[in-house]
Image 1: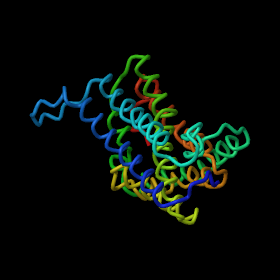
Image 2: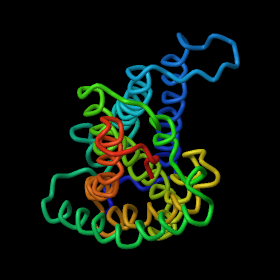
Image 3: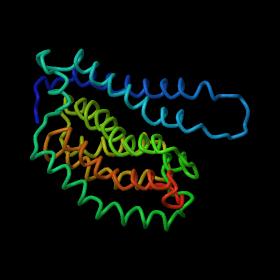
Image 4: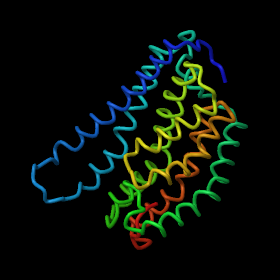
Length: 250
């Protein structure tokens, strides 16, 4: 999808927006963690609500930075610029494609996750979020917040950053769309900073990137990502409320 203004200068601008959002996430995380930085090495875990804030606040602020930055620096007329630049539009057909790719992707990702766990071991295969909440029992409100964060908020934020701002920057530089798909998939997987899980994250993100690629609609990728995250979010809800024994969240 071409929304106009495919020039290198807009690519640099959108890359700047993406990087500013990443810096915002780091700074926001530091602010959340600062009150709990005691300077000792006791390894005590964060209390539940600060942990939830760490899960929700940085990615939410990053979305604000991307939307505001795109409205200011993106290409095209000012009216509706952010939505056009980020290729975000409400189209039921595109959303259906995203949901279908997210669901069909589970056929690939669930066996891949199972094989990965068998290969590296359950202790090493868990995600950072799963490890952070492992063994915690949350009150119902906190557990629902964690569920919604993993299912809806995190996918939305990550897609706005990677398949929104970064994707558009590469498009402005004239990159082939399949190269953009491959590059954003790789960056998405590496930036999670879970080195051992990077190959698995590449596999998990393929259906999500395809939804963005085939529809030209960021929201299709968001839906695909949310479908992909639904089962881990349910697992987190059930384990943190004690319905199921804690075994880590994939």
